[in-house]
Length: 475
Image 1: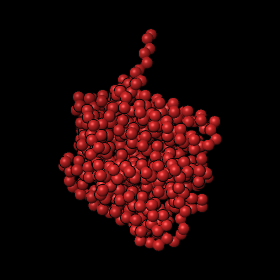
Image 2: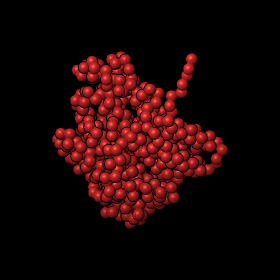
Image 3: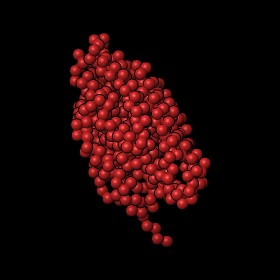
Image 4: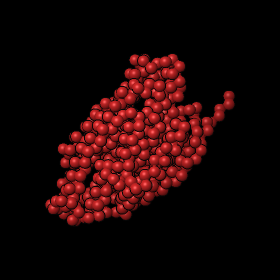
């Protein structure tokens, strides 16, 4: 019996990352200074990123796909993990949770995201999702001496398990209906048998939408996000707000645009009310928040609503604008969390929006950085956030969803209140407490990268969008 090992070339980034994550786990036993473990982790991710641009293709049949689409998302995941590690180094020392497995868990979670982005089969998608989720559950509760962190991990775990059940139920219906879990084979079967009006197919799409809706924190499946974002360590909140969300959109795009391509009208009709509800809840509930992490949690929900417009358009232009938006969101959101981490010191959390009162008078540079990120999250030119929203809205208008863009613009205008309120507190109020900034070289690098990216993409937007468009050629 001849056993031939499949061509593993398309999986080199995932295999390299796994080897590196295991090495970091072992190095934790040998290296006392955990800052060194963090630097090794960053160096490892940077080295693995060089393998992303190797030969593309499929392996294990067509279960694993390495293409431009997956590579673009993997770049987002690598940006996310590197910036999250940079803002973590000083923060976890202040929080007294400076353990080496923190970094290996971040790497394992990133591997799960990478597998999700490359999944050409629903079973592979599920494996990647569980690897990502299990690592993130532990990270959310990493500050085990804090009851809020414990609560965050438990809520995330219970609701995450619930969403996984929906995913598996949806997969089982699809398998029962088509006899396969391969995305392209599912698409072929639906077209060949003309299952466009099949109730079981619609039911499976609904179940998968619920599961993916949880991962991207879309309403009404968002209920975990505010409590988990508030309770988790701030550096992990930054990590979770970008990585799992981008991974959710990666699978949403691939599954709906490939497997369910012939029933676009059905899933677009499901996603439109979800997008409107997500923008509404995210922006309106954020107005009343006084904890900045909860405010950014609702902001994250709202941004998921905007990004859904790119999926709803159901064409390559919309998909490219969604990918472009998620890359921009990674920079501006992690940048905002990096400023929040600067305010965290011994005995002072810096989580309340009132802690920012008069910040421009005591720490003008921190106030300017926060102003840039708040402007970008609002969508004010010349920041990258404006460009991201502009391309999303234009792609939706071109696809005939002008009325939906009008709704999105109204909610975007509402969001200006709670973002600009932080700026008002920083520049138009007197400081009530003396805030001591916890500065570090690594956090400074993260702030430098995110600020430069937000401003450069805002001024020279075509490069990133062209990259996204090139990534989905032949998708």
